[in-house]
Every structure is written in structure tokens, then in C-alpha cells.
Length: 451
Image 1 (spheres, rainbow, N blue to C red):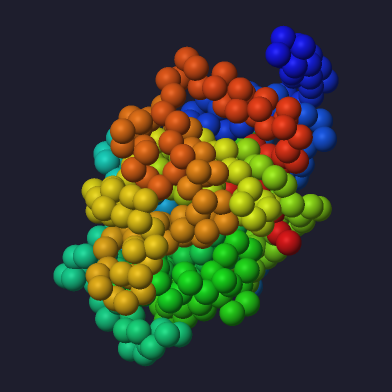
Image 2: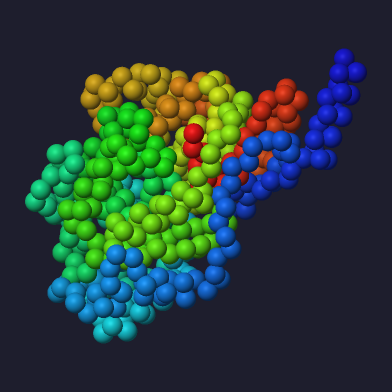
């Protein structure tokens, strides 16, 4: 037995000496892990951005795609507020680096501060706290402009539009947005595990849509379609639905933001809503979608780091994202900060109700026995469980106690921050010594594998 222990020790020592030190996004700081140099590393390949973000933004809105420059469009705007649609805290867009410059640019066109509204496209997420608004936009912006959160359940703040969506559903959108004299949408464009890509039309649906519209968009039938997946647009019902909703009340101007692997702004694509979004999606596909050279026995993946991994709800994106790179019945080792816990009350209750019973959950939503907020995330998690099984779906965090974490249909590992890297590294060492072929996703869902 001592002989085999020595062989194991020497093997691990050798690969750690000659292996790769890889930084993974995790929480606000990240963690470092050692991987063998023959593992498959999936990372995006963005070029170094211009450090003057304000200058980048001004160049983009002055040289747009599919529209006139923003200043010329503003001069022809209709009567009403200039509404700027922004993302909530779950998206790591560094608004503070360019939003003040955008607001000054709009003021320079003769538009008063009292004519401008910032509208947070929350979809079904909770409202933003004052501290989050200050963190996202800066104290000066919050002090000088109204920042309004969309509420999908407040019928008084919704307006029904003429016409139907792609699925034949009634379209109801936020009143501030519909009544605006000029609409500007902003948003992050990245691969999205349901809609193909985020940004563009997604700021409107689900961002500014009614509860019933969001329920359909996230419903069983849409998400049961295999084309509702990363980087897929063709025959993707989520993409077709929210594009039709966006066309029913389009933005007058769009500013699409691309972030690199360090969450720094890499590019802006501005102009016509659909033209600029298409260019942004093509760019993201080129820079952050990597072909799968071969399927791995095990995957080590981040869940994107803060703010994306601040709840288990959002961490599910990291679990789903890596599936194309993994063999059937392969092993996933994922980790997220979960500083805010599991997620909404409805989601937490749903996860605990169907703990170890995801098959029953699918039967119930398929037969329309109920519909509950955030159920779509558990439906997406079942894709992972169908491929790995619960025993092989490992999730590490220091943000959720073990007795709660083990109810989330994962192989639960609640670990203290002091032992976090060490514990995951030990798991990796065991994979290496067993000869497993490993793939790693240091950025989590910000780099997507494509078959």
C-alpha cells in the first residue's frame, strides 16, 4: 500500500510542477488551480481593448451601424422622455465608465435632465437596491436622474400593443418605454443558454415585458426545444419570440456592449437595434465560442464570477454552458460564490420541493399543473442532470450551508473560504490520477463550447 501511495504522490507532484496554473473567476477575487498541461482549456480570445472607454463609446454612437448618428436622431425625436434602458446588477456591465459620458452627450443636444429616465430591464429579477444603483451607475447619475425598475407584475405600468408575438401571444411592455419620445437600449452581448445570445431584443423581452409574456418565453415548450441553447438562433423559439416582441416596439438607438475575459469593455456596437445586434453577435461568436476537439470525461468550470455567481440561480448557466464539451455520464466540478444565497423565495421553495425529484418537476410543468417564477432555471438544470446524473454534478460554494446546498439537486460541497481552493484542487488531483480527460472553463459561461 505504501508503494502505491508513493506512486500517487510522485504523480501528483510531477503534474503540479509541470502543469498549468489557471485563474478561474469566482466571487469577486477568483481562485487559482493547477491543471495538467494536456487538458482542454476553453477561453475567449478578445484583443486588448482601448483603455479610454468613454472615447470608444463616443466613436461608436457617432459611427453607428444601420442608422444615423445618435445626435442627428435625437434632433428628430418625438415629444416625450428620452428613456435609456439599462441592465440590472446581475450583468457585469461597467456603466460607470461610459454612462456619464453618454448622458452628457445627450444633454449637449439640448435635452434637459428632467427629460431623461433610466429604466432598469429587470425582467423577473428583484428590484435594484439603492446601493446597487450607485454601484452600477455612480452617485452622480443616481442623484441627477430617475432610475426606475421594471415590474412585470404591475399591470398599471404595462401597455398592451396591437399585434401578436411570434407565438401568437398578446404583447404588453413597460409604459415608460412604450410612451417614450426616444428609446435607447443598452446591454451586454454574450452567448445565452436559452436565447442563443443576450443583448438587443432581450432587453425588451424579457427585460421590459409582462409576467405572462415572460412565462411563455421561459415556458416548458420553449425550453424543451433543443435549439433553445447557446449561440443558436435558427429555429430557436426564445429568439423568435423575443425578436417579434422587440419589433413590435423597437428602440430608436441601441448600444451593445462586449466584455473581454477580464470583464473589461472590449467593443461597442451601436446603431439600428437589429443591425448592430447582429454584428455584435457575430463578433462574440468569433471571439468566445470555441469548437470542441473532443469530449472530456470531466469538466472544471467557474460560474462566471461576481456578479453572475452571486446566487445559485445564476450559477446554473455555468452548469449548462459546458455540456457540449462533456461525455455522457461525465463529471462536472463547478463553483460559485453564492453570496446572496440560492435565489428568489419562489425559486428556493421550488428547488427544495423537488429536491431529488426533478422527473416529477418536469411532469408537473409539462402537464401545466402550475407555473412559478424562476422554474425555467430548474428546467435548464435538468438538462445537466440528464447528462451527468446528480452524483456527477459537483457544486462547490462557501455561500450556502451544506444542509441547504444538498437540496439543490447537486452533489453538494459547502466549503469554507480558507479551504476552498485546496478542496477543489484535491478533487482535480483525483481526476488526474485516475486518467480522466479534463476540460476547463476558467470564465464559466462567458466562453461557450460548440460542437
